[in-house]
Length: 252
Image 1 (cartoon, one colour):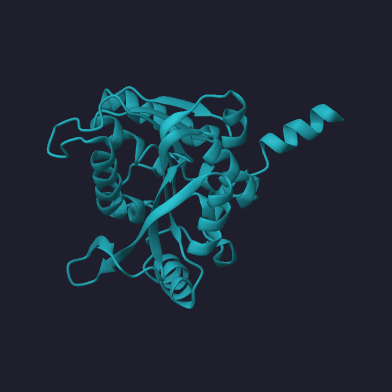
Image 2 (spheres, rainbow, N blue to C red):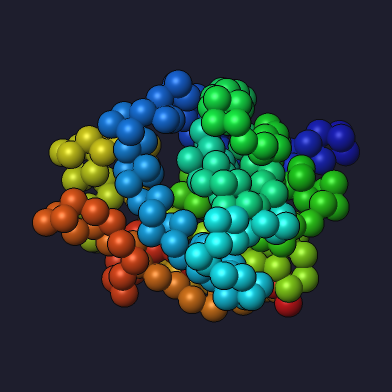
């Protein structure tokens, strides 16, 4: 009975239904015009935010070819590796994990074609935290709105950061605007994302991210919006937090 309880705890944040939804789309992660086109599109502002904060904190020149060289990064909920690969190109030593076997296989295959070195693993954040491995930076991008147990997930994520290390989370705010733009427009009208991929009730308000992380030693330093400009058809960092946002924190 104790073994069962332990196994359940290490899978606490995994939503099996969500894993199944993403598994059905695993072969389409790297199709720019496919079901994950919105993630491809917002990669530029996400990467800019992450790179700039890490360079400032570690005294790196962001103009260097590999400004993140020597930093150990963990990408939780990596999917097909859309953020892991560019971070590896920037010089980081990347470990990327996901609960879905199909996503990990798709990520490994594309990584081999890209001739990059990324340590992909099918494992939960809770399971990895038990291995006592710690990282300079932990990323949870477009993940927290998909987990089954947010407190457990954030606790494990914080545990995986070394003291002085950094944390990044990108997600959707739970507002009327995010329902209209993130679900009605993005999924049902524009078809940027597969219909049903999100549940508005699981979107995470900034306060619901900040308070639990603070209890586990991670202080959020900055939160930036990520907004879409229909005129230029591009995404950029902004001050608007009502739909998409990205947060940066440091562990004490």
